[in-house]
Image (cartoon, rainbow over all chains, first blue to last red; front, side, top):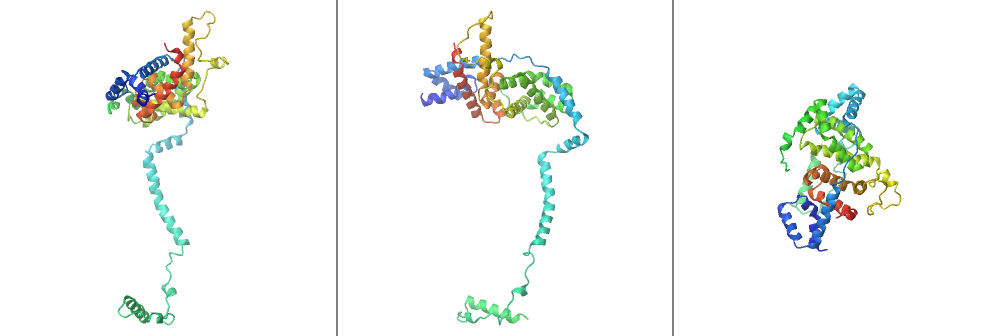
Length: 168
Length: 199
């Protein structure tokens, strides 16, 4: 089967049922005028379609409404008062309800987290500067004696040594 | 009939649903009486069993009644109703673990007989055409029942309920080309099974 025929046959049912746009329908009509294979396919499809239409529902069904009514009455009787109240509350649109729950959850979440952090985290307690301070005697600057004058390193050294002098 | 985007606003069935939402049972009865044949026809062609059809139809209309208070008409009522029917059929039968190859007790009792053989020998005084008609009904029932779920539903909605491709796409929640594909594959399968009946 040619590729064009395969493509056309996929659209055949839609063509037969007038579900195609006019432009596409014309393309298929034009193809069918010259292709005997597709003409045969269309005939078979049409026959099958017609035969299927014979499938009838000949069953006798019982009265539906009375059965549904009993179900409705049963349903209303079973539900206690608080179920009706809950049903009324839940009738708030679900997105609004979930947003409200989310917002209400943020504040306690933040407070809880902060409390947890304060209780268990050592990092919050900033270390005393005294712990890290060293005296000039402990720190030797001799190793920096070869730093050239008026260089960045020399400037930095003078800041550091001056800060030690200023410290009580 | 083409429907534009706003005609659902004037759909009388949407008005009926509003009344059902206010608790009017007479409006609900009108709705049930108007659509019960269509709904049960769809379900029966889908599942092939009378008792199941009645049970499922009751469930569906009960759901319609419960949904009425917060029903918002975004499309034609029939589109929404068929959506409920389709979803319920697909879920109900999946829950029941039904095989797609359903068969009536009569078909099962035939044993080795090939159901697709030419017209069987006549028995008794039954007219030939009536027997052939019954045979055809059984064959169609089986052939359609053997289709995969979505192909079967698309075929039923289009061939028997008269829904357009666009409406079927809305009901099944798929694209137009998907509907085309479903129906094409369904028809290819049925065409093979019904070839002997072609004139």
